[in-house]
Length: 95
Image (tube, rainbow, N blue to C red; front, side, top):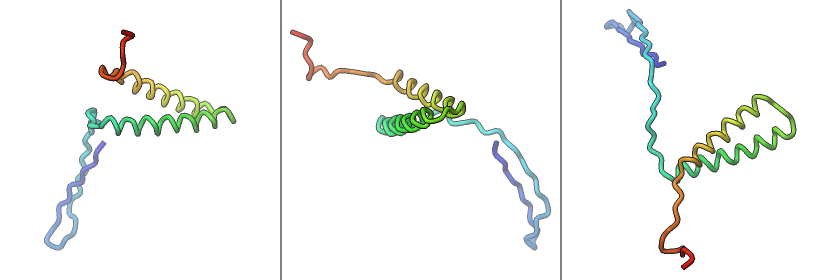
C-alpha cells in the first residue's frame, strides 16, 4: 500500500491541511533479468540451502524446515524453466 500525503501551505509556511490518501500498489510481475542474473540468484539460493540444511541437521526447527522447502521448490522451478541444448558442431550422434 502506498501512502501519499497532500500538504497545503499558507504564505507563512505553516501546514493548514493534511490529507492522507492510500492507494493499493500492484506488484511488478515482469522482470528483465539476464541469464547471468538468474545464475547468480540460483547460486546464492543453493548456498543458502546448504547452510540451512546443515543447521537443520543440528537442531530441528519447523520454521527453518519450511523455509528450506520453499527455497528448494523455487530452485526446482528455476531448473524446470531452463532449456537444455547440445551444440550441433561439438557432439556426434554415434556415426
